[in-house]
Image (cartoon, rainbow, N blue to C red; front, side):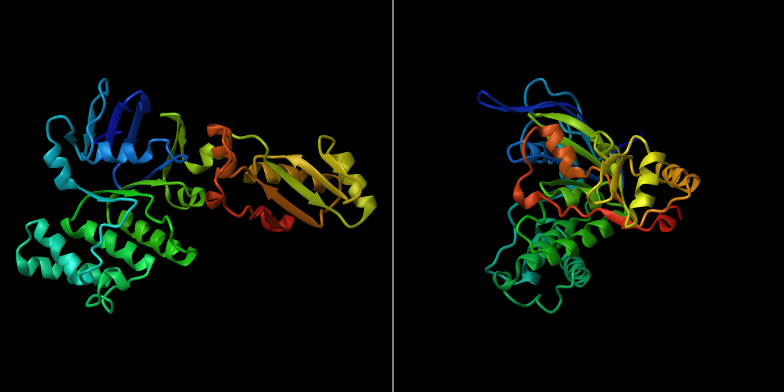
Length: 330
């Protein structure tokens, strides 16, 4: 990989005798969404603060480059390249949304006409035009979060750190925020996202790193991480007992449930695996009335890697994919 947006090697940080980060390596390609996933206290926010120059790395940390600039020697250049939206809103509720935007433009030393133009463009982009003249204290949580990110974009950053950006938002506002994040990346921005929401990482991230005990427990795409956890299977259900028994004979390794007339066959859920299963059923001249695929999700990965239960608010609704056999192989 050449010129990654972020490259950190051996990232370390301790507070007193508590080690928060213990030799963390992170590489984020340009124009991608990278998600750092972990339980409370895992060190996600500390990593963001270090990479965004808000906190110094601990002794023994290796080289850190953000936007092509060395953190140790050129922190000011990094600040000019990045934007940061933290867990807590930076919006000033006593002034209007537009005034918040213009304040950010002044902080970035934009000429007044340019600042007004950029503010107007971003307010329109984030669907805040109608509320622009109202005090930000009257905004909903989702509107404040949109304004927060719009303020972050005033300086035209190429790398954006989003530290748990959807915490506390209702499901509709979260999905709106996901669309905004995807749009940012489409425009060439690199997004470093921390989250406790497993479905958020699954939906958005090109790559995910699971942080636990100050170290990276695993890293990869959502699909790659899910393959680390065993337990995938296909469940076949039948209404005819004779057909069920014929299928059980053809699929000798299947776990049987004679009362429910169902078979459970180990599977990774991939198309090739499903096709092979259906071919075996065809060869036995039997057809299942229902086929359900279950593959491990990020909940399973999180539990397996961190050894702790997934917090209630991060649990996704686990819905198996149910289909008819002929639809599966398209």
